[in-house]
Image (cartoon, rainbow, N blue to C red):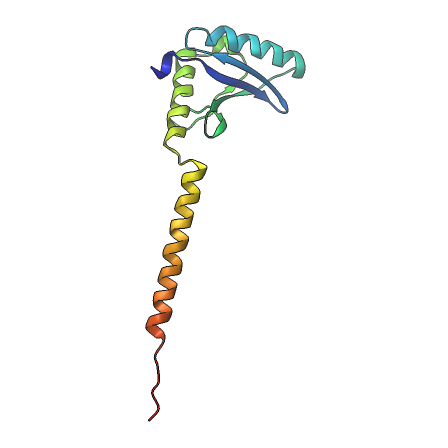
Amino acid sequence: MLSSQWHQLQLKFKKNTLNFSAGPDNLRSQLHSAFIQLAAKGGDVKATLMVHHQLHGWLKVCDSDQRYPIITNPLQLDFSNLWQSVIYTLAEADSWPSDEEKLRRNLERQMRRRAETAAARRSRFHIVKTT
């Protein structure tokens, strides 16, 4: 099941990032540890959480209302909600087309457009016979 797996996560604040892996059972401790390490680098931290998707790379975690949580104090977070947001983000990204699919769709659209243009030119072209 997807929710029992560990995922690669990243806590990001300005140019500082901290990577870690977590599952639903240890998200609290892993996130807290990463936040402390990030705070040691940057002081007053307002971090965002990112999750790694196998096709689309690093994605900012958002909930079903399309809100991105900004983490200022990990002790005040609802971790079950945060984990559901991670799962939601990955599920949304699964529905997006891959780069190959986008390329294939663009080629199909381009071929259709060219065929329509050629058909329009052929319909306007008339041979004038001189007698």
